Image (cartoon, rainbow, N blue to C red; front, side, top):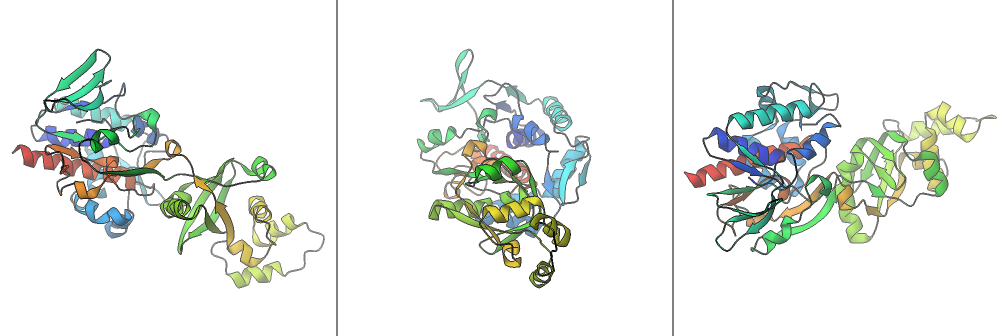
Length: 388
Protein backbone atom coordinates (compact mmCIF):
# COMPACT_ATOMS: atom_id res chain seq x y z
CA UNK A 1 0.00 0.00 0.00
CA UNK A 2 1.30 3.45 -0.86
CA UNK A 3 -0.57 6.12 1.06
CA UNK A 4 -1.78 6.01 4.67
CA UNK A 5 -4.99 7.98 4.31
CA UNK A 6 -8.48 6.46 4.66
CA UNK A 7 -8.33 4.63 1.30
CA UNK A 8 -4.89 3.19 1.98
CA UNK A 9 -5.70 2.09 5.51
CA UNK A 10 -8.98 0.48 4.51
CA UNK A 11 -7.50 -1.38 1.54
CA UNK A 12 -4.73 -2.64 3.84
CA UNK A 13 -7.30 -3.83 6.38
CA UNK A 14 -9.34 -5.66 3.71
CA UNK A 15 -6.25 -7.46 2.41
CA UNK A 16 -4.85 -8.32 5.83
CA UNK A 17 -8.17 -9.84 6.91
CA UNK A 18 -7.88 -12.12 3.88
CA UNK A 19 -4.44 -13.28 5.03
CA UNK A 20 -2.26 -11.13 2.77
CA UNK A 21 0.98 -9.69 4.16
CA UNK A 22 0.65 -5.91 3.82
CA UNK A 23 3.01 -2.98 4.33
CA UNK A 24 1.74 0.60 4.12
CA UNK A 25 4.25 3.22 2.97
CA UNK A 26 3.67 6.95 3.47
CA UNK A 27 5.93 9.97 3.13
CA UNK A 28 4.45 11.74 6.18
CA UNK A 29 5.63 11.08 9.78
CA UNK A 30 2.25 9.65 10.83
CA UNK A 31 -0.86 8.18 9.15
CA UNK A 32 -4.30 9.67 8.61
CA UNK A 33 -3.34 13.34 8.74
CA UNK A 34 -6.10 14.56 6.43
CA UNK A 35 -8.60 12.41 8.33
CA UNK A 36 -7.61 14.16 11.56
CA UNK A 37 -8.10 17.58 9.95
CA UNK A 38 -11.55 16.49 8.76
CA UNK A 39 -12.26 15.50 12.35
CA UNK A 40 -12.07 19.13 13.41
CA UNK A 41 -15.43 19.57 11.69
CA UNK A 42 -16.89 16.49 13.36
CA UNK A 43 -15.65 13.88 10.82
CA UNK A 44 -18.54 13.58 8.40
CA UNK A 45 -18.20 9.88 7.50
CA UNK A 46 -21.06 9.46 5.04
CA UNK A 47 -24.69 10.47 4.40
CA UNK A 48 -28.05 8.89 5.15
CA UNK A 49 -29.90 9.78 1.95
CA UNK A 50 -31.15 7.04 -0.37
CA UNK A 51 -28.50 5.30 -2.43
CA UNK A 52 -29.84 6.46 -5.81
CA UNK A 53 -29.67 10.13 -4.76
CA UNK A 54 -26.32 9.43 -3.10
CA UNK A 55 -24.84 8.02 -6.31
CA UNK A 56 -26.06 11.00 -8.32
CA UNK A 57 -23.71 13.22 -6.29
CA UNK A 58 -20.79 11.82 -8.29
CA UNK A 59 -21.99 13.18 -11.61
CA UNK A 60 -20.27 11.74 -14.67
CA UNK A 61 -18.21 9.33 -12.52
CA UNK A 62 -21.32 7.61 -11.14
CA UNK A 63 -21.23 4.74 -13.64
CA UNK A 64 -17.66 3.78 -12.73
CA UNK A 65 -18.09 4.22 -8.98
CA UNK A 66 -21.51 2.60 -8.67
CA UNK A 67 -20.48 -1.09 -8.48
CA UNK A 68 -17.99 -0.37 -5.67
CA UNK A 69 -20.48 1.85 -3.84
CA UNK A 70 -23.23 -0.76 -4.00
CA UNK A 71 -20.87 -3.41 -2.65
CA UNK A 72 -19.84 -1.13 0.23
CA UNK A 73 -22.61 1.45 0.76
CA UNK A 74 -23.08 3.96 3.62
CA UNK A 75 -24.70 1.37 5.91
CA UNK A 76 -21.61 -0.80 5.56
CA UNK A 77 -19.36 2.09 6.49
CA UNK A 78 -21.44 2.75 9.62
CA UNK A 79 -21.28 -0.94 10.54
CA UNK A 80 -17.50 -0.90 10.07
CA UNK A 81 -17.17 2.09 12.42
CA UNK A 82 -19.38 0.35 14.99
CA UNK A 83 -17.09 -2.66 14.76
CA UNK A 84 -14.26 -0.41 15.92
CA UNK A 85 -16.38 0.64 18.91
CA UNK A 86 -17.28 3.98 17.33
CA UNK A 87 -20.99 4.78 17.52
CA UNK A 88 -22.47 7.08 14.88
CA UNK A 89 -25.53 9.28 14.54
CA UNK A 90 -27.45 11.02 11.77
CA UNK A 91 -27.39 14.82 12.02
CA UNK A 92 -30.25 17.14 11.17
CA UNK A 93 -28.89 17.56 7.63
CA UNK A 94 -28.73 13.80 7.06
CA UNK A 95 -24.97 13.67 7.46
CA UNK A 96 -23.50 10.84 9.54
CA UNK A 97 -20.90 11.53 12.24
CA UNK A 98 -19.14 9.63 15.03
CA UNK A 99 -20.98 10.28 18.30
CA UNK A 100 -17.81 11.80 19.76
CA UNK A 101 -17.57 14.21 16.77
CA UNK A 102 -13.83 13.51 16.60
CA UNK A 103 -11.48 11.56 14.33
CA UNK A 104 -8.83 10.68 16.93
CA UNK A 105 -10.71 7.84 18.72
CA UNK A 106 -11.61 6.23 15.39
CA UNK A 107 -8.07 6.47 14.01
CA UNK A 108 -6.55 5.06 17.19
CA UNK A 109 -8.93 2.10 17.21
CA UNK A 110 -8.30 1.56 13.51
CA UNK A 111 -4.52 1.53 13.88
CA UNK A 112 -4.81 -0.95 16.76
CA UNK A 113 -6.86 -3.25 14.53
CA UNK A 114 -4.32 -2.99 11.69
CA UNK A 115 -1.50 -3.77 14.09
CA UNK A 116 -3.39 -6.83 15.37
CA UNK A 117 -3.74 -8.01 11.76
CA UNK A 118 0.02 -7.77 11.24
CA UNK A 119 -0.06 -4.75 8.91
CA UNK A 120 3.31 -3.00 8.81
CA UNK A 121 3.50 0.81 8.62
CA UNK A 122 6.58 2.50 7.13
CA UNK A 123 6.42 6.29 7.53
CA UNK A 124 8.77 8.87 6.01
CA UNK A 125 8.92 6.76 2.86
CA UNK A 126 8.32 9.02 -0.15
CA UNK A 127 7.43 6.98 -3.24
CA UNK A 128 9.63 7.76 -6.26
CA UNK A 129 8.36 5.21 -8.80
CA UNK A 130 10.01 2.00 -9.95
CA UNK A 131 13.59 0.94 -10.60
CA UNK A 132 14.87 -0.96 -13.64
CA UNK A 133 13.89 -4.29 -12.03
CA UNK A 134 10.31 -3.14 -11.42
CA UNK A 135 10.76 -2.68 -7.68
CA UNK A 136 9.13 0.21 -5.84
CA UNK A 137 11.61 2.93 -4.87
CA UNK A 138 11.21 5.09 -1.76
CA UNK A 139 13.20 8.08 -0.58
CA UNK A 140 13.76 7.73 3.18
CA UNK A 141 15.83 9.59 5.80
CA UNK A 142 18.36 6.76 5.45
CA UNK A 143 18.56 6.88 1.65
CA UNK A 144 16.70 5.16 -1.16
CA UNK A 145 15.00 1.85 -0.46
CA UNK A 146 13.77 -0.62 -3.11
CA UNK A 147 10.88 -2.97 -2.39
CA UNK A 148 9.56 -5.92 -4.42
CA UNK A 149 5.80 -6.51 -4.17
CA UNK A 150 3.40 -9.05 -5.64
CA UNK A 151 0.82 -6.27 -6.04
CA UNK A 152 0.60 -2.57 -5.25
CA UNK A 153 -2.31 -0.31 -4.41
CA UNK A 154 -1.76 3.41 -4.88
CA UNK A 155 -3.83 5.62 -2.57
CA UNK A 156 -1.88 8.88 -2.64
CA UNK A 157 -4.83 11.28 -2.61
CA UNK A 158 -5.52 14.15 -4.96
CA UNK A 159 -3.71 17.47 -5.18
CA UNK A 160 -5.31 19.59 -2.45
CA UNK A 161 -3.91 19.95 1.07
CA UNK A 162 -0.25 19.46 0.02
CA UNK A 163 1.02 20.11 3.54
CA UNK A 164 -0.85 16.98 4.66
CA UNK A 165 0.67 14.82 1.95
CA UNK A 166 -1.76 15.11 -0.99
CA UNK A 167 0.32 17.12 -3.45
CA UNK A 168 -0.38 15.27 -6.72
CA UNK A 169 3.30 14.81 -7.54
CA UNK A 170 2.59 11.19 -8.38
CA UNK A 171 0.86 12.29 -11.59
CA UNK A 172 4.10 12.75 -13.57
CA UNK A 173 5.44 9.42 -12.32
CA UNK A 174 2.38 7.64 -13.69
CA UNK A 175 2.27 9.64 -16.94
CA UNK A 176 5.84 8.54 -17.61
CA UNK A 177 4.58 4.95 -17.41
CA UNK A 178 1.76 5.50 -19.90
CA UNK A 179 -1.06 6.20 -17.45
CA UNK A 180 -3.34 9.08 -18.49
CA UNK A 181 -3.89 11.57 -15.68
CA UNK A 182 -6.37 14.41 -16.23
CA UNK A 183 -5.42 17.87 -15.02
CA UNK A 184 -6.18 18.69 -11.39
CA UNK A 185 -8.64 21.44 -10.50
CA UNK A 186 -9.98 22.74 -7.18
CA UNK A 187 -13.18 21.11 -5.91
CA UNK A 188 -15.27 22.12 -2.91
CA UNK A 189 -13.54 25.47 -2.97
CA UNK A 190 -14.52 29.05 -2.27
CA UNK A 191 -14.67 31.67 -5.01
CA UNK A 192 -13.18 35.12 -5.43
CA UNK A 193 -15.39 38.21 -5.73
CA UNK A 194 -14.27 41.82 -6.22
CA UNK A 195 -15.79 43.21 -3.01
CA UNK A 196 -15.45 46.90 -2.30
CA UNK A 197 -13.15 47.76 0.61
CA UNK A 198 -16.14 49.02 2.61
CA UNK A 199 -18.16 45.84 2.13
CA UNK A 200 -15.16 43.62 2.87
CA UNK A 201 -14.34 45.47 6.10
CA UNK A 202 -17.94 45.30 7.33
CA UNK A 203 -19.04 41.81 6.35
CA UNK A 204 -16.02 39.48 6.03
CA UNK A 205 -16.69 36.60 8.41
CA UNK A 206 -20.47 37.07 8.45
CA UNK A 207 -22.60 34.02 7.54
CA UNK A 208 -25.19 34.33 4.79
CA UNK A 209 -28.27 32.37 5.89
CA UNK A 210 -30.89 31.32 5.21
CA UNK A 211 -30.55 31.53 1.44
CA UNK A 212 -30.94 29.51 -1.72
CA UNK A 213 -28.13 29.65 -4.26
CA UNK A 214 -28.81 29.13 -7.96
CA UNK A 215 -26.62 28.37 -10.94
CA UNK A 216 -27.50 26.91 -14.34
CA UNK A 217 -30.99 25.93 -13.22
CA UNK A 218 -29.93 24.17 -10.04
CA UNK A 219 -30.78 25.52 -6.60
CA UNK A 220 -29.14 24.64 -3.27
CA UNK A 221 -30.65 25.85 -0.02
CA UNK A 222 -28.15 26.29 2.77
CA UNK A 223 -25.63 28.79 3.99
CA UNK A 224 -22.37 30.37 2.98
CA UNK A 225 -19.75 32.60 4.53
CA UNK A 226 -18.65 35.99 3.27
CA UNK A 227 -14.85 36.13 3.28
CA UNK A 228 -12.28 38.79 2.58
CA UNK A 229 -11.64 37.25 -0.84
CA UNK A 230 -15.22 36.29 -1.75
CA UNK A 231 -17.55 33.51 -0.62
CA UNK A 232 -17.37 29.90 0.57
CA UNK A 233 -19.43 27.31 2.45
CA UNK A 234 -21.44 24.14 2.05
CA UNK A 235 -24.01 25.52 -0.38
CA UNK A 236 -21.22 26.98 -2.53
CA UNK A 237 -19.31 23.69 -2.50
CA UNK A 238 -22.40 21.88 -3.78
CA UNK A 239 -22.33 24.11 -6.88
CA UNK A 240 -18.55 24.46 -7.13
CA UNK A 241 -18.00 22.02 -10.02
CA UNK A 242 -20.38 23.78 -12.41
CA UNK A 243 -19.25 27.23 -11.21
CA UNK A 244 -15.58 26.32 -11.70
CA UNK A 245 -16.19 24.89 -15.17
CA UNK A 246 -18.16 27.99 -16.22
CA UNK A 247 -15.37 30.29 -15.06
CA UNK A 248 -12.80 28.23 -16.94
CA UNK A 249 -14.97 28.45 -20.05
CA UNK A 250 -16.26 32.03 -19.85
CA UNK A 251 -13.90 33.87 -17.50
CA UNK A 252 -16.54 34.46 -14.82
CA UNK A 253 -19.83 33.06 -13.52
CA UNK A 254 -22.94 34.75 -12.14
CA UNK A 255 -24.32 33.08 -9.03
CA UNK A 256 -27.86 34.12 -8.07
CA UNK A 257 -29.07 34.20 -4.48
CA UNK A 258 -32.58 34.14 -3.07
CA UNK A 259 -32.20 36.08 0.18
CA UNK A 260 -35.72 35.17 1.34
CA UNK A 261 -36.21 31.51 0.41
CA UNK A 262 -39.68 30.16 0.99
CA UNK A 263 -41.34 33.55 0.53
CA UNK A 264 -43.39 34.19 -2.59
CA UNK A 265 -42.26 37.00 -4.88
CA UNK A 266 -45.76 38.54 -4.80
CA UNK A 267 -45.91 38.50 -0.99
CA UNK A 268 -42.50 40.10 -0.83
CA UNK A 269 -43.55 42.83 -3.25
CA UNK A 270 -46.67 43.54 -1.16
CA UNK A 271 -44.59 43.91 2.01
CA UNK A 272 -42.14 46.26 0.31
CA UNK A 273 -45.05 48.45 -0.81
CA UNK A 274 -46.09 49.16 2.76
CA UNK A 275 -45.54 52.71 4.10
CA UNK A 276 -42.12 53.12 5.71
CA UNK A 277 -42.75 56.20 7.77
CA UNK A 278 -39.57 57.52 9.33
CA UNK A 279 -37.80 54.15 9.29
CA UNK A 280 -34.45 53.81 7.56
CA UNK A 281 -34.11 51.28 4.74
CA UNK A 282 -32.26 48.84 7.00
CA UNK A 283 -34.77 49.15 9.83
CA UNK A 284 -37.74 48.77 7.50
CA UNK A 285 -36.29 45.75 5.70
CA UNK A 286 -35.34 43.99 8.93
CA UNK A 287 -38.72 44.60 10.56
CA UNK A 288 -40.95 44.05 7.53
CA UNK A 289 -39.35 41.18 5.63
CA UNK A 290 -36.58 39.98 7.95
CA UNK A 291 -33.74 40.98 5.63
CA UNK A 292 -30.44 41.11 7.50
CA UNK A 293 -27.85 43.87 7.34
CA UNK A 294 -25.74 41.55 5.19
CA UNK A 295 -28.63 41.13 2.77
CA UNK A 296 -29.03 44.90 2.50
CA UNK A 297 -25.26 45.24 2.07
CA UNK A 298 -25.22 42.69 -0.76
CA UNK A 299 -27.97 44.54 -2.62
CA UNK A 300 -26.11 47.81 -2.30
CA UNK A 301 -22.81 46.17 -3.27
CA UNK A 302 -24.48 44.91 -6.44
CA UNK A 303 -25.81 48.42 -7.16
CA UNK A 304 -29.43 47.23 -7.12
CA UNK A 305 -32.57 48.95 -5.99
CA UNK A 306 -34.28 47.15 -3.14
CA UNK A 307 -37.05 45.32 -4.99
CA UNK A 308 -38.68 41.92 -4.61
CA UNK A 309 -36.97 40.72 -7.80
CA UNK A 310 -33.55 41.80 -6.56
CA UNK A 311 -34.05 40.12 -3.18
CA UNK A 312 -35.21 36.88 -4.79
CA UNK A 313 -32.48 36.84 -7.46
CA UNK A 314 -29.41 38.74 -6.29
CA UNK A 315 -26.52 38.33 -8.79
CA UNK A 316 -22.94 37.81 -7.62
CA UNK A 317 -20.15 37.68 -10.20
CA UNK A 318 -17.52 35.08 -9.30
CA UNK A 319 -14.12 35.75 -10.85
CA UNK A 320 -12.11 32.63 -9.97
CA UNK A 321 -12.10 29.59 -7.71
CA UNK A 322 -9.65 29.60 -4.84
CA UNK A 323 -6.26 28.00 -5.58
CA UNK A 324 -6.00 24.23 -5.59
CA UNK A 325 -3.99 24.12 -2.37
CA UNK A 326 -6.86 25.96 -0.61
CA UNK A 327 -9.57 23.58 -1.84
CA UNK A 328 -11.09 20.85 0.32
CA UNK A 329 -10.65 18.32 -2.47
CA UNK A 330 -9.57 18.16 -6.09
CA UNK A 331 -11.09 17.16 -9.40
CA UNK A 332 -9.03 15.30 -11.98
CA UNK A 333 -6.75 12.32 -11.53
CA UNK A 334 -6.26 8.93 -13.17
CA UNK A 335 -8.51 8.77 -16.23
CA UNK A 336 -11.14 6.05 -16.10
CA UNK A 337 -10.25 4.70 -19.55
CA UNK A 338 -7.00 3.44 -18.06
CA UNK A 339 -8.65 1.73 -15.06
CA UNK A 340 -10.05 -1.80 -15.19
CA UNK A 341 -13.26 -2.92 -13.52
CA UNK A 342 -11.23 -4.23 -10.56
CA UNK A 343 -9.34 -0.88 -10.27
CA UNK A 344 -6.15 -2.27 -11.79
CA UNK A 345 -4.27 0.19 -14.03
CA UNK A 346 -4.31 -1.13 -17.60
CA UNK A 347 -0.83 0.21 -18.36
CA UNK A 348 0.64 -1.25 -15.15
CA UNK A 349 -0.52 -4.82 -14.45
CA UNK A 350 -0.34 -5.56 -10.73
CA UNK A 351 -0.80 -1.90 -9.78
CA UNK A 352 -4.20 -0.72 -8.53
CA UNK A 353 -5.54 2.70 -7.53
CA UNK A 354 -8.16 3.90 -5.05
CA UNK A 355 -9.56 7.03 -3.45
CA UNK A 356 -9.02 10.58 -4.67
CA UNK A 357 -6.30 9.55 -7.14
CA UNK A 358 -9.11 8.54 -9.50
CA UNK A 359 -10.89 11.11 -11.67
CA UNK A 360 -14.07 11.82 -9.69
CA UNK A 361 -15.36 14.59 -7.49
CA UNK A 362 -18.28 15.04 -5.12
CA UNK A 363 -19.58 17.70 -2.73
CA UNK A 364 -18.89 17.67 0.98
CA UNK A 365 -21.44 15.87 3.11
CA UNK A 366 -19.85 12.45 3.53
CA UNK A 367 -19.55 11.69 -0.18
CA UNK A 368 -15.77 12.13 -0.30
CA UNK A 369 -14.93 9.67 2.48
CA UNK A 370 -17.54 7.15 1.35
CA UNK A 371 -16.03 6.91 -2.13
CA UNK A 372 -12.54 6.54 -0.67
CA UNK A 373 -13.66 3.57 1.45
CA UNK A 374 -15.71 1.95 -1.32
CA UNK A 375 -12.99 2.19 -3.98
CA UNK A 376 -10.35 1.02 -1.49
CA UNK A 377 -12.32 -2.14 -0.82
CA UNK A 378 -12.85 -2.71 -4.54
CA UNK A 379 -9.15 -2.28 -5.27
CA UNK A 380 -8.25 -4.66 -2.44
CA UNK A 381 -10.63 -7.28 -3.84
CA UNK A 382 -8.97 -6.74 -7.23
CA UNK A 383 -5.61 -7.52 -5.66
CA UNK A 384 -7.01 -10.66 -4.03
CA UNK A 385 -8.34 -11.79 -7.39
CA UNK A 386 -4.93 -11.29 -8.97
CA UNK A 387 -3.04 -13.05 -6.19
CA UNK A 388 -5.34 -16.06 -6.18
